[in-house]
Length: 252
Image (cartoon, rainbow, N blue to C red; front, side, top):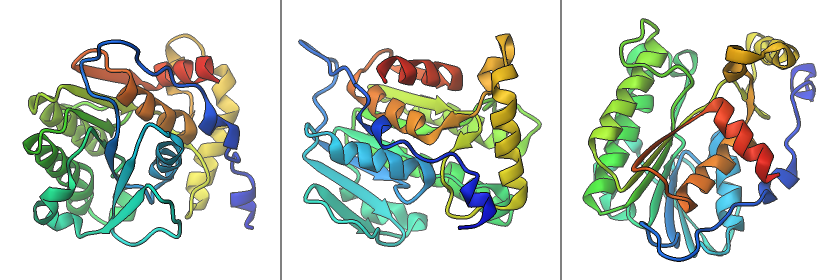
């Protein structure tokens, strides 16, 4: 293990078992039974997939992937697809909820155009197909500071996606805006490792208005995604990073 990987915060398995209050009585949405997840091979998507497979209320978990995952589960169905041709897989994008964990970085994408394809066009196409198929719930990861009018290209694209998703008028749309994500990355550059370490050290000092910038664990984000799907509130719900951490801490 490299010195960078060793210094990362380790995942806490018990977080996956944090309590989620299932709705009782009449609900605006049907129970979760068949769900779809896109991006299950990623940092947050992997944690969410574990949660979905532990949720005994869910009978089918359909994972849309570019390459197979090295796991097997009786309720997991893996679909290897080309995300640039999502329209050809419309029949797969149906059920009680769709979870979108698609995302990359401009550095990983190699260009702004490729980044926008992964972080805007793929999620929006996924959402449009879900809407056409009558999926009531769409839960997606955005970013702290997402703003369509931002001068920062990354935050601008995230804000543009949020606006486009809101226009689709799902029965329930939940957007999660996490801060810096803490978790075990498959690939970690020295600059990323340094940013994580600085964020961890500075986190206790981030008080008042700065609390919203505190780093957040991927377990917390994944838990909030599933919690949002089970507990429908407003038609459009935005969970800021600080709110996600508070909810997660209260449940654990």
